[in-house]
Image 1 (spheres, rainbow, N blue to C red):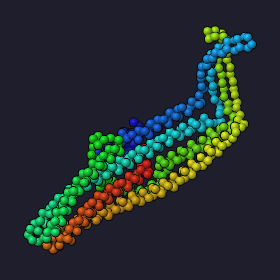
Image 2: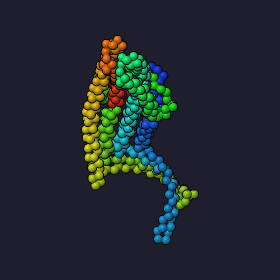
Image 3: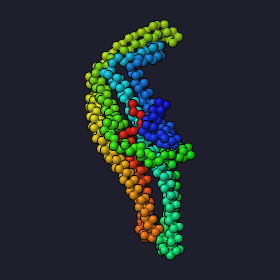
Length: 417
């Protein structure tokens, strides 16, 4: 519950919580229902139990031992029955137990970062399909307005054709373009259904279990436009992959200490109390013992030496891996951020092109209806307007999709402790 509440707060901070079915609504559904996310939460619980289990090495162990034996020496047979309570305490084993506890603690931190990465990946998938669904919905609305315009244009051209002022080829072309616009509306409806299906699938639900997205591409674009000039260098050390690589290095260092513990003496305390006798019904003798054992390793065939070398090499590999992760991440962030900036600059450019196209189309229509412009030129300008309207929607979608890629790379939309 704590993870879900804090994650919801961060997600709403990084996304516009404007309407009931906005982005945060779908992200929250994903947090509650995503199977892969639930798996990572269980892995975190396993890590926490591993830590609890690792402390058992520092605690005494108790056991009850019952034994019965028969001994024959020459012709004399003797019976012996024993009942003992044994206790063993590991006083020192070269520091291996403390190393295992440290590794278990690091394992919890690593599991938390794996959970953060899973949330970021889940949020990425949901954001992608959310914006794709918004795009498909807005595209359908745009195409429906285009159908209305094409219908009006066809009616006007038909009037000119019947009046002998326009040729049949231009009339037939206008008729086909109206049919094309109507067909694109139908295709956009299919695109909406496909996007909704993918959105529901990424959440872990069926289409019937989610609502249709609300909001607009332009609304989100305006919200994030200043985000494109932000510097993310300070965020690199917080990225889950970098933290996980650091934790792997710490684990390797502890494994080195554990391997080296084999060269150090170990000290054990063993004690027992009990009773013995000829049978279990006649346990008439009390017994007690206390042993303090110091074990000094001398030679085991070279196994411990090679284990120590392997652990040291693993530590060196993890150091190289951490360095590689940072280099790769800086490159990936730089590339993604530049593409993100390019896409938002393209939005501004497309807005200007669209405004210019609207003015050109309005002027061209006036000239065409007045007979001052031929059909071919007028139709090219109208087609240019439609193309720029579609390009505008696509530019908004691409900018938002690039933002989701950058968020995923940085691990945004997740808990920062």
